[in-house]
Image (cartoon, rainbow, N blue to C red):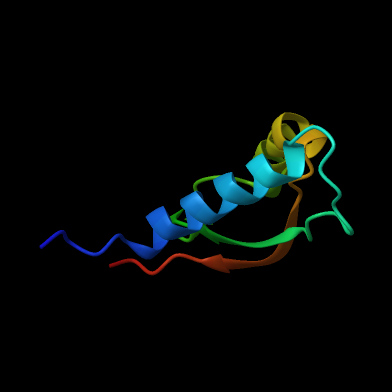
Length: 85
């Protein structure tokens, strides 16, 4: 019996399938893919985040540059500190 895939793997498969269907030539897509909500969890050392907002925004902008033309968009919806554990 094969192990059950992780939620992260299932999410990746679903995104890949959606992008593939969306990118098919002549495919009639009624509406664009909705923006995927992103919650950013940031680790902190001595109370200071290891990455600042500018770095996080640059990473999201790069993802938009890479995936935007295929119809995949990300929307930063929240930011929270990462638990120490």
